[in-house]
Image (cartoon, rainbow, N blue to C red; front, side, top):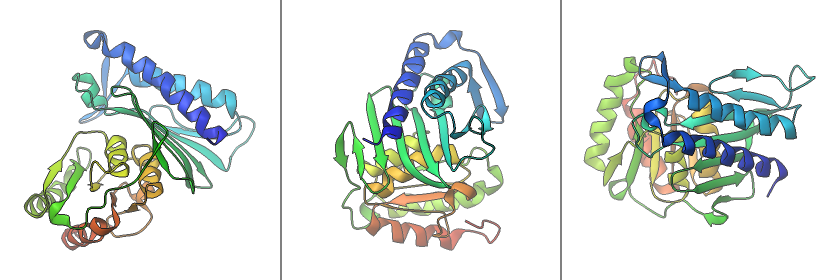
Length: 270
C-alpha cells in the first residue's frame, strides 16, 4: 500500500471511531444548518479534526480541502502540488436520523489529479481503497465494476439535487425515463458510498447533480481503478469542477450518458 494511502486509511478509521461513538447518543448531538437541506453536526467537525491531525502530522507540507474547514495551504508553503480532499461524514442527514448509510471519504490529489482514495463505511466496517494505476480494493480484496451489458438490466444509484432545486425539473424528467428503462433506481444519500458500490459491482452506474468535490474525489478514483468510466453529464472529465457526475460499468455508461445528455438544457454545461 502506498505510504500516503496508509496514512489516509489510519485517518479514516480514526474518524470512523468518532462517528461510531457519537451514533450511540444521537439525541445529544447539536445540529446546525449551513443552507437549506444541508446540515452540519459537531460530529462532522470532530471527525474532520481527527483526520486533519493525522494527515498534518505525516504530511505537513500538503494542502487540505475539507468540507467543514475549507481550504488550507501546507505548512510553510503557499501552494503544494499535493492536496487532501476530505469529507469527514458524507451522509450527515442520514446520520442525524440514525439511518446507517454514511461514510468517511479522503482523497489525495497531485496537481489536481486524484491519486489515492479511501472511502470507509463505519457501519459495515468496509474499507474501500485505490491508488492510481494499482486497482481498487474492498478490505484488501480486489474489486471490479459489474459485467452488466444493458441499461434495461441495470441497477442505478442516484441522488436528488437537494442543493440545486432550480434543476429539479430536469432531474425528475431523467429520473422518470430511467425508472422506465432500468431494473431500478436507488437513492441512499451518500455519494461516496454510491460510487464505492459502483466500483464493487453492487450498482451498475451512478449519477448525480450538484455535488462538491469532496463528495466525489475518492469514489471516482475507486470506479476508474475498478474498470469503470467516470465523466460529467456531457462526457467530459470536469466533474470535480462542475459537481455533476456519471460513473458506471463501460457497457452501461454509454447509454446512460446518452439518455441524460439528451434531456439536459443548454444552461447545464456538464
